[in-house]
Picture (cartoon, rainbow, N blue to C red):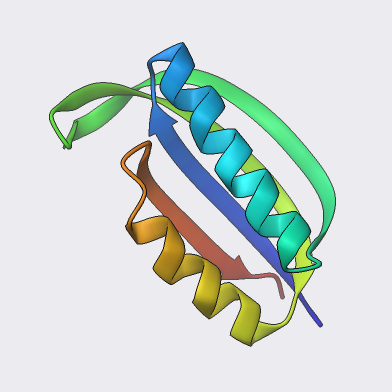
Length: 92
């Protein structure tokens, strides 16, 4: 198990944010990912448009997971319309 930092930007629409969080939470639960910290950073203006959106709702997580699990979750997240951007970083 490795420690990761995970940042995700959802569509700023409240309904889309809720759908996105449900998806991320279900992925974590199904993959036995241990979340040690979760922070709602709120809606912020984006530096440039992403999927024709000017604003995004940011969430930050610290978690422990296997590298294979992170790869599988990344592939699944690419297919979700609610997720504008996401980034997994190995915590040193």
